[in-house]
Length: 464
Image 1 (cartoon, rainbow, N blue to C red):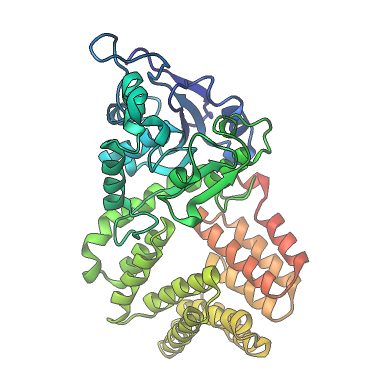
Image 2: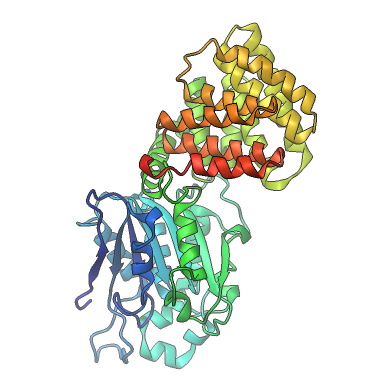
């Protein structure tokens, strides 16, 4: 394979997760990406990430079998990527992979072949990758000049085999995961002027929510001219996710946390039918964190049939998020019904923690879904009484106090409670959940000032 390179662009003082660029056909680790790696290096919200660019043999020269030293096929390169990821400086780290063109096929092959690598991946971005094959790679010249080109061809054996293996392991746009976990976020990025890899090939195999289009041709999309170009912003938005630049939950911590969720899934999911309530709730939260919301709902439904207000309330939360995503009334109605049932049971059981949790969600659904401000305010007052039965340092209690005061038209008290939330230094997933809920409340209140203040509160630079 010649002398492949792993170029270090940046390594933080305390190594954590890493971004790895993987070039395509005819590219190399240094030249393919232009200033792209440097733009990510200089992005504050990615300051906890190492940044590397991986090279491998792919020269534009004839590959006459048996006459010249042949460059490796994509399957071999997938194995090489796995091998490189198991060695320093990438060993044992969470990884985000950004791949161009054929490099995306290399990444896909590695992910379907090596579960130990898949478990370490937090994000995958394919830029101009011919995931459904490439007509221009077919024919006599493609077969003459490159093994790699032959692999990319529409008439190759490699592409159909890869797509089927991907469907079996991860699902795709036409067949949902159906229990096949995808423990990483995925984005397929196409150039609006890419005449080499058509959008039907780069984006077609993936769901609409995973598709991104940016300005540029096949090469320009990975050689951005500025840090604010859409190609760079797509990568930053994908990796940072809900993490606010400079905020108390940064993208590096979230990536590490994703690995913890995957470990919880591996431990708990095989015994889903027999889990106690706390374990069922933990499994559901972990499943949703890695994008498996339907599986989370199913796990909670199984547990709810055996009783438990925690599982009931958590299940209601999954339906609430479906309502947020789709705007349909049925899941909203299910969420309100379950929250109300769980609240009533919690009150009868004299369980203040469950009562304030389910009660504040009843208030939210009354306000945002039913548009009944009076009912929301009445429940908010009850919730504040329940909060008196738990320690005032409880992060969920503080968040509940903040939300309840919004419904009582006391925004200053609400914002003060959220400031106390941040001061307790919650886990990143807790911070994301609380911030998202608070923003939904402020939006439902049509209070732009509160939304601005919440962004300030949850993005304090001294909390990184």
